[in-house]
Amino acid sequence: MQKSPLQIARGNYQPKLPVALKGNVKVQEGAATESVADQEEIKALFPNTYGLPVLELVKGDETTYPAVNVGVILSGGQAPGGHNVICGLFDGLKRLNKDSKLYGFLGGPSGLIEHQYTELTAEIIDEYRNTGGFDIIGSGRTKLEETWQFDKGIEICQKLNIKAIVIIGGDDSNTNACVLAEYYLQKGCGIQVIGCPKTIDGDLKNSMIETSFGFDTACKVYSELIGNIQRDANSAKKYWHFIRLMGRSASHIALECALQSQPNICLISEEVEKKEMTLNEIVDGIVKVIVNRAEAGLNFGTILIPEGLIEFIPAMKRLIRELNDLLANNEEFLAMGTDDEKRQYVKGMLSPDSRELYRSLPKGIARQLTMDRDPHGNVQVSQIETEKLLIEMVAKKLAMLKGEGKYKGKFAALNHFFGYEGRCATPSNFDADYCYALGITATYLITSGKTGYMALVRNLTAPAAEWVAGGVPITMMMNMEKRAGKMKPVIQKALVELDGAPFKYFAAHRDSWAKTNQYIYPGPIQYYGPSEVCDLPTHTLMLEKGVIR
Figure 1 (tube, helix red, strand yellow):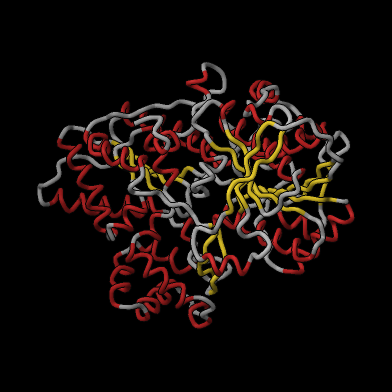
Figure 2 (spheres, rainbow, N blue to C red):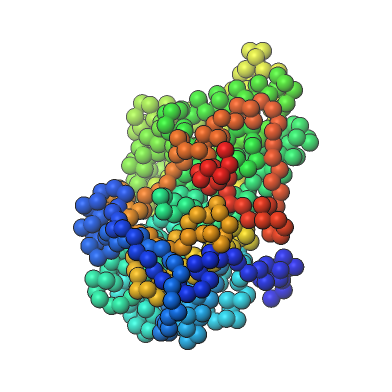
């Protein structure tokens, strides 16, 4: 395989580790835990893994470890650093006993069910150190929820003498890991299950998990692109750039990129929901900034838009809910011939408020809401081109103001979507170090006989040597939520906290950013150079920990 100079150099990078993980290690148990909500329901569903203590890895005495075979699964969307979790897991196992083996299940959780696997050797591992992507074994979105799936997992684990499975994934994947751990304890089959916190969206965090891996790298990639666009906008001085950023539920990516690049406008979905803003109010807010900047001779700017914005607008949420109920498995609707017929049918079936909103939408967006649906019949919100919707509505409003003599500027807009550009990027030093430490941590949780835990590394704003490694019971992060009409235990998603330090900092500065050009151009990820440039975590994390104010 031909490699670029950067690939070769990154392959030789040695991730930095917490001091506690460099020598002999033992597990220190803390106090018993309980779930973040719905304690009785969660306890009843997870009698064997509920109430476990938080764990910390500390220096211990020299110990001889027996060889152990471990399986690893990459689950869900890609995130920079996943390969380093696997590398840390491999190195940790081999360090404790050279005869231990690591098996990768291919294509995600389906590899466990379908018995598709490969043994990960030193030769394979060395090809993937400090690289982006999940291509070492592939990923998938199959959910581990059914008893027959769990039993198929037992079959292959017994065949390969696998004693533990590490699932690298987001909130849903780690919820499934906990269900699997509980089932294997009930069956007494001797298979441990450990999770690792992955998602670029940044919504898998809580009092114990400071950040999910991949968030740092993805935001740095997007922020570089935003900075480049802002430099171009400030040079050409004629375009408004509407930039939609990946982040299905929460606005963490949009907020972090705003903190790094200081755009003229950044919408935060959680604020929109809290203020119960309408789509027209959002448009009016954008128009106000554009008009004010035009009066100052600035007919250009940048606007960041979180991917999930539509679902956080209360009126849009109600419309989407009505459409989901109306159109799911609706044979009459599916049998209609033309788009106009379908549009008229939908308008006739909606509530008055939702009908009026639906009629006000551009036809292309209205069609996306009714035609492009997932296998369950629901609107695929992440596919809706919100940036184009806002451009069209803003342009109409500005044209009206121009006709009234209230706007004398020029409006030309360009749209962008940044998502896949960041999911498989070469991990930053932070993510490379963090993920490798997570893999080593998972090793010690396994050799200590733990199950139903998520590997954690905390104190992440300090130098890597001072990071604190351990484990948190997955049940501690759970609550009950309605999924597909049924109440199910899930890890609670973390949305942007409007009373948190990152949002407060943003809110205190956004009016100034809107009026004048205070753009920051972050540039590409820095892999080499002084630690204060190359090893910093996200602005979000530093603000949360009071490192920057």
